[in-house]
Length: 276
Length: 328
Image (cartoon, rainbow over all chains, first blue to last red; front, side, top):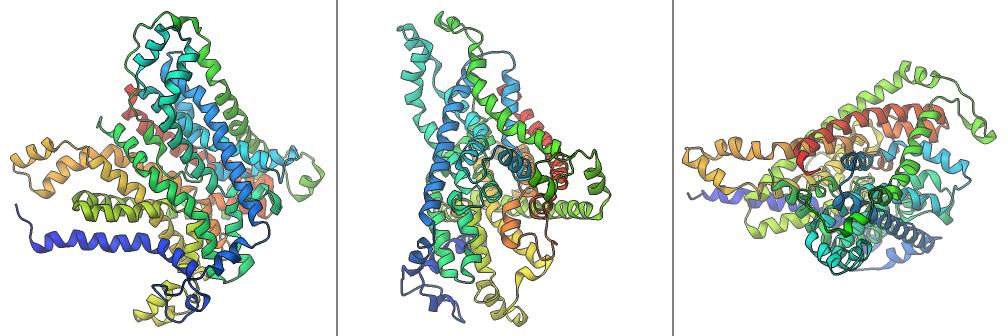
């Protein structure tokens, strides 16, 4: 069955139009960040920058406390991911490998926890943290971020643990390993890719978190990059060059991680969909 | 899910659909030494964290909603219970209902656009040749990966009153009154920008996952359909659509939940303005509670919002659990 010229053409034309639509905002962010100010505030947009300048990046990173924000973001995110991995590893092993009463209940419980409406709970979280005199500290942020990514981490790792053939573990135990040792020597090394991608998704979530830090930490010393970015316009008015440079700096690590990880997200889905 | 979360960058729920290891089988003796308590001990840290860091704020929110808690009480650290006064005030006032209606409409419009456009893009992906498909996938993944706060900043620049690209294009197309249009000056135009942003960043999830699901449809089904004389449209409605239905249901609910609590996008684009006209429920709870320092009232609004979300979540989980009943 041969399709007409039009029939072959329109999907490709639509694809190109859609591609431009989806990429343009990202492209515009980067291109504005590198354009000289004269090209940014011109009557007609300069679609392809010819002169490249790093002045906006210098300005964005030269803001007071910039490196504090970077350090804070990194500390909070990495600690949250590390903690949740440690906690989740134990739990996911139990859920994937052991039969016990209430297992199904635990799984459903974590599925519900995964959908927790954090955006709406910030008032209560603010009061808790204030009553503990922990406002403007990184500790509450870290533990709450840990909790935000914990259910996802457990449920995902559970899938990865289940995928490690049980026979390997049994063989190790026949060879005289205890269950803990079998876990450490056999399962853990095989889990490395799973741990990697799970933690990177956790990283993305924690890195992007905005409402909680907005409410909890009003002092610059305890703020993170999303706040810096959202306050950038208030601080710089209409300096779009610097604002876009800031956005680019914030987005680049995530864009890289995500493009690298996206395949895994989809294959996880198809693994479930095969059943139909 | 993160996602984010804000919105997690991908649909983690789906990842849990992996195959569970087969039925229980006899285990070596070593396993029995572990004792019946081991699984509970292993789950203890996770459960303790959940109770402490998720359960407690939830309970605290409910407690706060029964208190008269404004600036004065906050500073003096006093607890003044006032029964159901906050709820009475919220539920009898006009604002709450107006915001609820607005939230529902906002969610409905966004989710409808996301699902229709996402499904069309997903089907297009399935139809494209390899090279064009990769091209479109790259575009989708880039949009999907953009961090929310960065994306809102970029959209503010695209829709900027002066030197914004959108206004320039509209002006060029002959709509000259848009040349210096301020998108944040009215309710509808602010919602328009927020909607474009949300739809733009949500389509990739739907489209890519839908495309992935179509690749799992056995081709025998299409062959059988064409043997039965089904044309393109017929085989779409009799093979593709029924196969994708469970997936579409689950995704729609996920999107409803995500859009309903889209705090960051609405708040960062225009702070719920102009004149508080674009506040949806989570933003309303925040501005009433933290912004105007009526913490008790804010907590009551939050509890009501959480109840709505819990209802949606329960329904969503029922859909998902039904699909993998045997895997749990």
